[in-house]
Image (cartoon, rainbow, N blue to C red; front, side, top):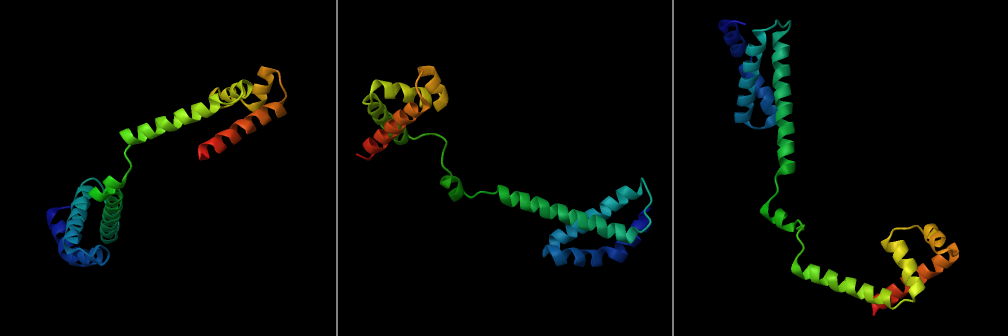
Length: 165
């Protein structure tokens, strides 16, 4: 496309294309920018190929640029976080207080478990700490599944009862 042809196309469509864009964008400056970018892309494309309907193609380029703008704007809105929002996000770093509380709770749990009968402690340890299923615990200790279930139920009942105290 020659410069005079591009100038004629610009004179014929620039204001209507800008109005078209402004209907959606509600920002005259942005509409002007996208309109100018549309003509720039048209000029670049026309140096390599021919277009049957230049007017329709121009509006299609403008619409695609506008859609790209909306996508980019939506992406940026999802990324923008205010200082107040950043402060509301919990830190992955554990505070000294929360670490101390967790350590204290773990000690209490260990004391409760140590107060259980030795067989119940062993079954509880195999199931909870070693990750064995109840059936695997029963097979390893050569006891019935119902015995394992009873010991685990007793251990959990004791943990719940003592934890409330």
